[in-house]
Image 1 (cartoon, rainbow, N blue to C red):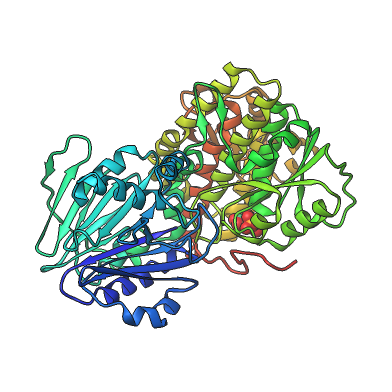
Image 2 (cartoon, rainbow, N blue to C red):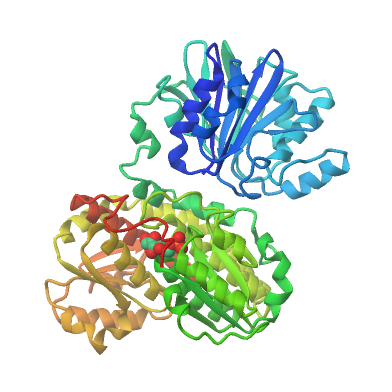
Amino acid sequence: MCGIVGYIGKREAASVLLDGLKRLEYRGYDSAGIAILKDKRINVAKIVGRVKQLAESERIRALQGTTGIAHTRWATHGKPSERNAHPHGDCTSTIFVVHNGIIENYKELKQNLEQEGHTFTSETDTEVIAHLVEKFKKEGNNLETSVKKSLKLMKGAYAILVMAEFEPETLVAARLSSPLRIGIGTNEFIIASDPSAILNYTQEIVTLRDGEIAVLEEDGYTISSLEENRIIDREAEQVEWDLEQAEKGGFAHFMLKEIFEQPETIENSLRGRVMVDEGLVKLGGLDAVKEELRQIERLTIVACGTAYYAGLVGEYMIEEYAGIPVETCIASEFRYRKPILIPKKDAVLVLSQSGETADTLAAVSEAKEKGILSLGIVNVIGSTIAQNTDAGIYNHAGPEIGVASTKVFVSQLTVLALFTLFLGRQRQMSLTMGKRITEELLKIPDHVRTILETDKSIFEITQRYVNYPDFFFLGRKYNYPIALEGALKLKEISYIHAEGGSSGELKHGPIAMIDPNFPSIFICPKDSVYEKNLSNMEEVKARQGKIIAVATEGDDEIQKIADEVIFIPKTLEMLTPLLSVIPLQLFAYHAAVLKGKDVDKPRNLAKSVTVE
Ligand code: F6R
């Protein structure tokens, strides 16, 4: 995820900024850059690669001055390159901006600015901010007003820092849905997206809130609200975190942080893509293949591990709502079997967080070899899979640091729901159904927040069950893949034996294992297979098997059968996996912590599997 650092004070800004960028490295990035103001001139240095390279570069030695801004970029718009690295400048190279987030309407803004004569040098959404500030400055506004006027035109999410030669004593900061904090030192300020870049200098921190803008000068600062234009008086907080805690946002592990940031992850995957009134989705990455997709008659989804389970959910979604036959394959199988794929009729969709998984990449090559349209749902921009597929959709989930995938899984489900809508509306799906799905999708982040609030009771349930040696995870239809994912999560990080499967298959063999010492976790929301699932639960109960159920709020029936119930809010059946997986992630997490395991780095596992 991108990181921002800014400095205004008496020290050499470069050393504070580079130190801050190093502290932000754990968030993941592909390029970095820095801009420093001296004698009313701004000088910039950028690199593709590590902060260390930037710190050792010739250019950085020439950057002296006591005011500056810096950034680590994790590509979202445009591939990793020096041109796309921040800070971004205006036409005159005298106004510079660093930005985290996504400007949803940047294409439209860019087009208007180009028509007015502005020349762009990068592919980023961020560059529009520098040109907007330039435009308003030319109309006679000061830096603060120029930034405010620019922000009023922007839709999306942002944390920004702006500096300009025409007002060299000022730094402007603003945020909307992306964090930004001001560290208050003695006659100096360190502004950063993440407290870890500040804590080395001060523990007094003021957090900017959504819709606020701060104007900083060496001897003071003001915060005002963008909408009402009134000055806000906010006390600094004393942040007691050490640096390690700060990196994890105060959470004990990256995995827990990532589980808790899932509402925002889903919002980021949806941002700018949903048009509720038309019941449509906008997926820019598919524009070039839109007509080919209208013609396809079959889809093969290929992925590994957790991404494969997301693919299985996608299979149910696409078959039910877009009417296209789908087969989901494990990538390591797909590459060695004989897939029957017919050009123009078939398409292959691969899912990959890293975009580098060797088996998944091989599936893309296989599809290409056969002349089959290949699509990707990938999290890492510019990764090999993203480059090698014909078209695709980025997750925009930000880097996932915990080895066991959590937030990217829910993001994959979100994007698959969007893709289903895209394909469905190209075919028979009605406007009413399109609207219904989009409306429900937009409610999912708040539903996830509701589930996360029940973490304490999930922890208590885990405490009661953590010493059982084996678990079944069982579900049907949309929640069958979630049972598989729940079992995988528990195995991966707690090393407790767990098997995932379909509730309907239980009586065909696995039920032989059930006894009072072998608990089952049933994912049993009120959906089209609810009654069937209840019957399967009864089969387990009749054999004295203990049951933990994940059920829909207000379901009194289930409490009569299950020993423990974790409730999730009601949503459309196709979207239940986005909710039902959350308690399973928390169950696995708490079990692993209670067992004293290294949650973020489970034994024998790697984050990116680049070998066969
Ligand atoms: C499990 C997990 C793995 C990955 C799999 C594919 O928690 O993370 O099962 O999902 O290795 O990786 P990507 O998505 O990078 O292709």
